[in-house]
Length: 177
Image 1 (tube, rainbow, N blue to C red):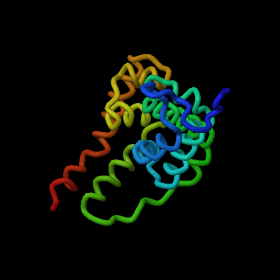
Image 2 (image 1 turned 90 degrees about the horizontal axis):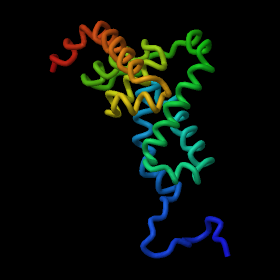
Image 3 (image 1 turned 135 degrees about the vertical axis):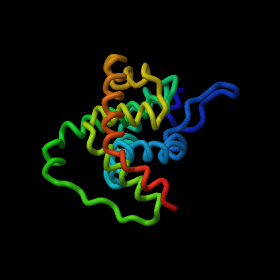
Image 4 (image 1 turned 180 degrees about the vertical axis):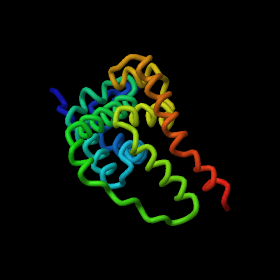
């Protein structure tokens, strides 16, 4: 008789996929951090994380069968971010958000970095975050965003040049103690 997802049902010694609840608890924080770096806003990052988890839940059978479920989740997160940015581009231009309040000295540099990331186009920002924050290879980022490796390399190079130009004075924050 089929189990239909109720109870264990897996024979001893077989590798059953993790339950969605366990996966969500284990990876929610990391997904949120990546979402925050992509969005630059805590509320939007929470929404993006929840949307990603909802999509994963909806297609859990397929997601749990993936070889690397974390990479699968990161792909869903990045693609969801880019799709939402494309849909809301006009709203984002019309409504600029105020920066967060500064709590201590490290926050100055963090706010400056988030602000500089926000100036990059969404796709370039996604490439920089995935390549340098998530430490993914050029090949992985290209596959994840469905583009060529040379596109990832050139976009990352241009984006880093823009960030360096924008953050030229950031060393002032880092040296003050």
